[in-house]
Length: 254
Image (cartoon, rainbow, N blue to C red; front, side):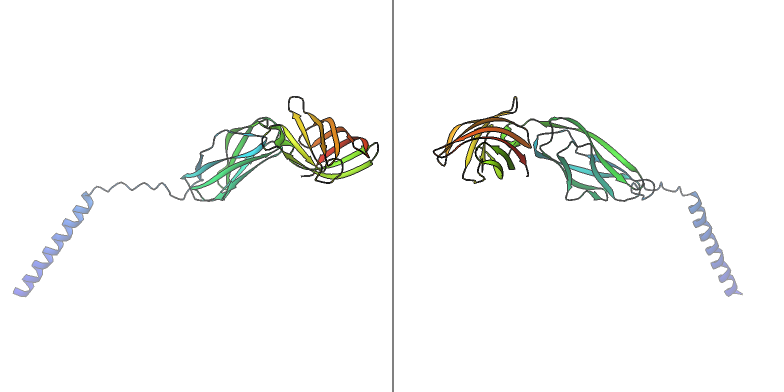
């Protein structure tokens, strides 16, 4: 009889304890859930920061560091590209043009004889869920500070000469290291690069002047016109055994 009374008392205590726990759980106010900004749900949202207008000469390059920053949505790759560049201009992203935000890359525009002007260009990000995201900047291409920069390279000279007849030789154009708007044409008239003739450029009207000069015992003089890819020159060559008048077109090959 005493044993059954003790069991009854223990059961009563257990029931009372469970009842108190249940009441406490019911009266407890649930805490607010912790926000999760990277839920991985919904369309990807991101920003491209660090872009600004760019200015350079017709030959040259400019770089800026840009950041593709994650905002929300599921993570996926963003592909970067550039739209609206003028002829002679190229763009690249280094070390990467595609990646999962957030990431950093260097955006570079390089001009190779690009026309002078002001160009609205678009840096575009593209992802599967969000489509295209466009950012507008302006590229300003300035004239050469030194016009000789525009003619440096290799040309083929096609000539009709009064004494030498028809010629076609490769020449190399270099710029003077100290005097602006002055070039040297190696291989002039003969194709022999030791024939190095200087010419002064007038960028105002794109004319060339070859002042009287003697190279390898032969005298040269002449004049002409030019653009980045072509020189048209009329000149005279005189010496003890030569008196040649030539009309030449120099066409860029590199």
